[in-house]
Length: 129
Image (cartoon, rainbow, N blue to C red; front, side):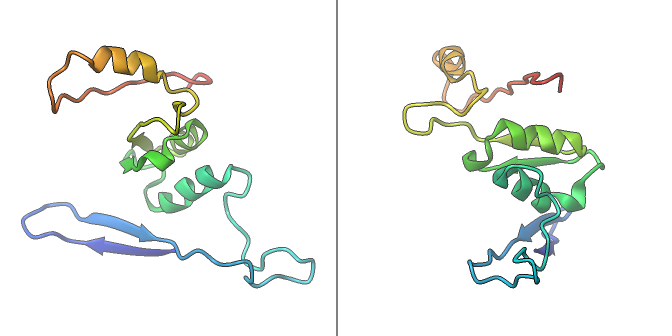
């Protein structure tokens, strides 16, 4: 994983980008057939582990990360919460269904009379978090 910090002209705070190059199936293995470079967050789901790895530099400092709809997964958002990162993601249906724990039909009902460009934040409590 590589970190890049970009300082934009006229802005006080930099924008941080992280890039992960994905290994293929031929990645190096140790004598027991396990990956030579162990994955730090292997006890999490694949998506949650990726979210944790990509936000590692901002753990426990109270930052917010905005993500694409592919990262709208409750276990990942909760895993970020556990390390002091607030996560927000675009929500959209995947085929005919909303992501698990997303009350999509209620959101649609709430937003149906709102003007174009209106935005709202939904806060949820899942597993006491």
